[in-house]
Length: 525
Image (cartoon, rainbow, N blue to C red; front, side):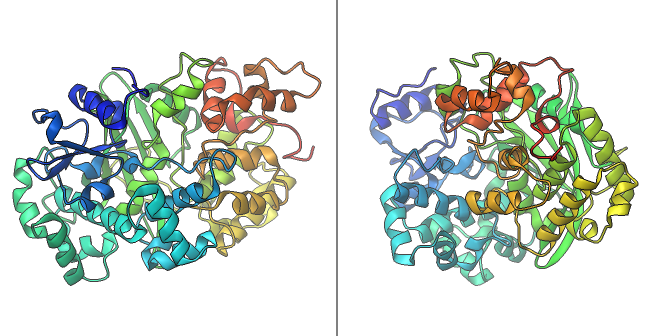
């Protein structure tokens, strides 16, 4: 089925619902008036009659209308939540963009996020009043920001209750509720059953069998919209994987990515491992998380969604890029589990090939990375923390073959992150973050744009000085290749990050791409 933009919203949604088209998963939800349930477009139950269907662009609006989530298709598994990534400032009016940015903050994992403290801090982060936030949010999404946040918390709790045997008190806390009493009251009022009843009824739902004990590794399900070129993404990670910290597997029987990870939680760092296995026929990823990371499970799930770009909307992206890159509709934008790690690797990759950058990064991990025990052979180290590299000296880094200029850049970057002056994740504000990154010694526009692409998840970043990009766009012979690349890319806004990935994919495997090539401004020589 193809997109039907000329049809009214409800009619187009009903066509997608009848086809169970996974490309529309998360872009709308169907409320069935005869049952009081709302579903994803991919729900396998019998298609309801057209007159019994109401369509909503996001789950919070469906719940505001009085519908309860389906226990079979599980709306909490839908990619993206129906809220698009905030576009570039030139694309829409400021109020709509502010509302989109507020939604992105509310979508952040409960632990450590701005939204965990309530709506007030979100408004303060955006530089507007609470009242103005409520007004612009309701104008765009049809619900208040508080109601939207409550829906996100409830759906997060619903997934944890369904997929795990974590205690209800822990589920409540991990989902962002201040108390178990409040959690139980809201859950009962919204869904008509208490958390214990949901767990008892889950046997009738199409959900994976939960772990029998909270002290074992557990598996949760993450969904995405097709098309998705799994092989291309895993090959990208394979060419860059570091010994001991990552393991990408691509075979006829398995497509997976395993990694070690350390996250901050309540002022402390917890470490562990995870494995993401693709189930392409069902457009799902089965995420297995070690016991040690369970307290930060919502945060880990968000990071994996960003790493694998599971919330991308291929229909919107391909509408802009397909004519110029018809062979690349399934390519995604590789993210990262840790923005600081990505930034360090970007600095180390300045002006050298991918293979050479990988060699230097491996030395850094071997010298400064902490050992960790995992059940997977070859996965046994953590990437060095910001605090560890902040305490390193230039001589320490020089012994690894890192040139003096990049020594200063890495130490300055590590100190800024360790002191909390710089945060590198998808919820970080773009303009201030890029300004702070560019203020670091030895960091230029290429590195900043690459960080925006992969650490911040910004869909419209564009490293105009990238030499491999010039070659892919056939502008390397122009008097000013960077300006020529920018001109060629003007038609790809607001998806230039995806265009960069598609342009790089056209180069031979032996060509240096991504983090390895750019103009000398980043390295100053």
